[in-house]
Image (tube, rainbow, N blue to C red; front, top):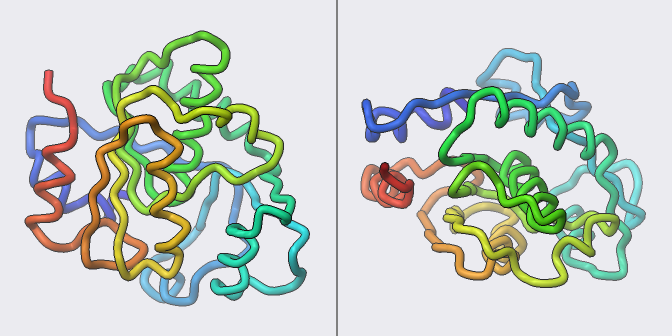
Length: 203
């Protein structure tokens, strides 16, 4: 995330302090392009399992499974991940939670759990980059209605999961939605980075 957010952090300069929190699970599958550019370990927040197919991580098949409502999806270790993120929030007391990909899903899940329990989140805004809707069947009751919480959803139009990712905004009642001409990554262009920076609340 430090590399991914470098341009955003330069844009915001002294307006924002970034605190980075990582998952604790070592990933079993690494995108070859990612493995070629970065040293490990490669960590995730939780696992994803579903009953649509076995033995392949081919993106198109994975996307079909996520978008097929007849497929049961599970997030092993998601509860532990929520606890880990909750502890970090309590420790650092951020104004905004910024998440990329799986981190954006986890932030949405933690927000939904707070609202369902009648405990308004202590933070004021979610910024979610290249995230996906929460899909695990066990958490479906948390999303019987869109979340009434401020959020910015930013999505790359060249993301291989674009059609699914763009639906994350629908899990919020009134999310600001941004698109940029990149893939599954933070926006590269300065104008798109500026738009993302402008979405963060100022105090």
